[in-house]
Length: 226
Image 1: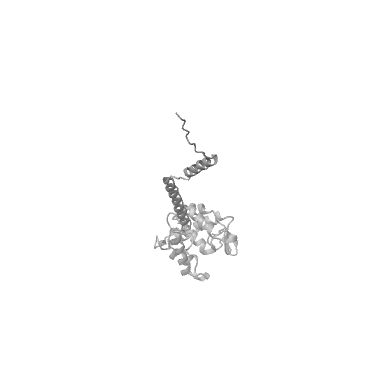
Image 2: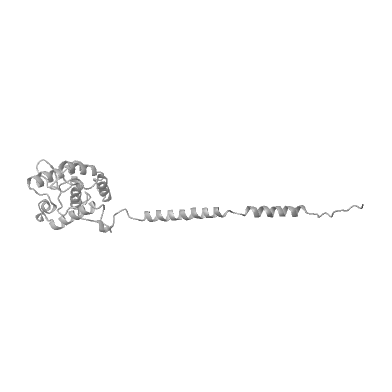
């Protein structure tokens, strides 16, 4: 029986290698659809978070302007503190007061004499812009009190060795003279005696300023909204 020779097809090693390489490339290019979706979701979530953070950072920590309210129409200076120690320190620091950090002293003396420290801070602001203007820079006085016997005298005003002493004496004066001796307890009653027109004061403006500042701070603002 004659031998039948099978015809062999010659394959170049290069051809085989190319095919194998081609197959490997096709296999490696495949990417699961679920993984693509997951990546897209993570990317979208990251963008949303970044936008929210940017929005929050641009939002003022101050309450809206319409939230400034009058909590006490009578403006009685007597009562418990309506401002926290931290908030008063913020106000003092904001106005670059040399009495910065004395919020605790204002609070404690207010408790001692039964006077809301919001009013002490308001008088301080009106008299010397928190101790940054006028003779208060030297006297450490909260309210530019006229000098009397037993007190150091600087330009006709009581002078103190420290802000602590000046703060304490202001409360004592209001408590002893205005509340107990004269029976005056409201801003409208006290200011015409404390800062009379005869001393070149605008009583009406002084009264309105104190009231506005007390309302402002009680509403959570450090300064008037721009």
